[in-house]
Amino acid sequence: MATKSEVKERLGIELKEPKQYKVIMWNDDFTSMDFVVDVLVTIFHKDEMTAQTLMLDVHQKGQAVVGKYSYDIAATKVAMALNRAKAEGFPFRMTLEEA
Image (tube, helix red, strand yellow):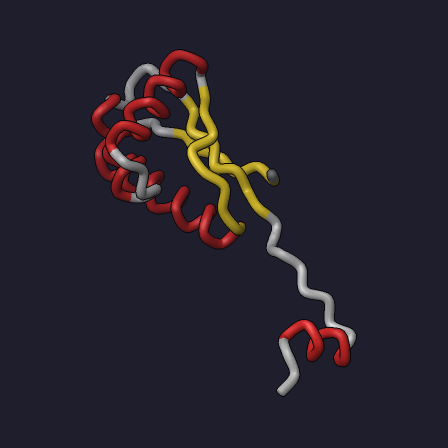
């Protein structure tokens, strides 16, 4: 039985990893720190300590990269976070940038 690499070689197929996108969270003066931590824990699956550290980075430095994902996953996570912020009345902002 042929291995995966032998099959790829025979077929001339070159596999590429999908491009990665950084999710950037931006600071504002209105979104609560508790909300930011909750988004990081529930949507971005960060542990509580990491979420607290990232939230403080955003607050003190104006922005922070909160994760790197393929485009579809990054865009979905950003949309979920922005929809939750809108529902709670926060002017929360996140962007995507190719890594």
